[in-house]
Length: 63
Image 1 (cartoon, rainbow, N blue to C red):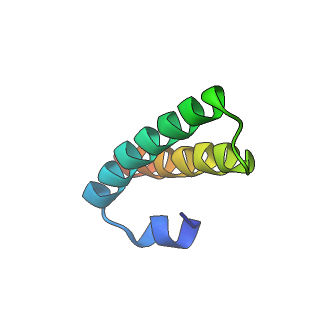
Image 2 (cartoon, rainbow, N blue to C red; image 1 turned 90 degrees about the horizontal axis):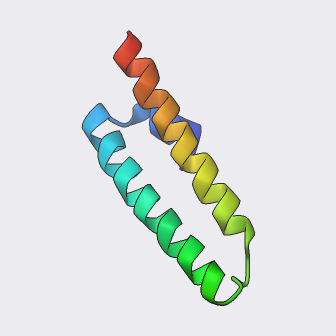
């Protein structure tokens, strides 16, 4: 998810996307443990996406 998409989304949408992203990350991680992923960079991208969303949610809470 790009930063511009995160900025435009509502807080409720971001919270929903955060839970979906965390589930997708755990699924990818489990799949990678069992047999190596074809593209392990997916793990890094998913983790960074989660961090971007969490950061935006925290920023909105502070304001």
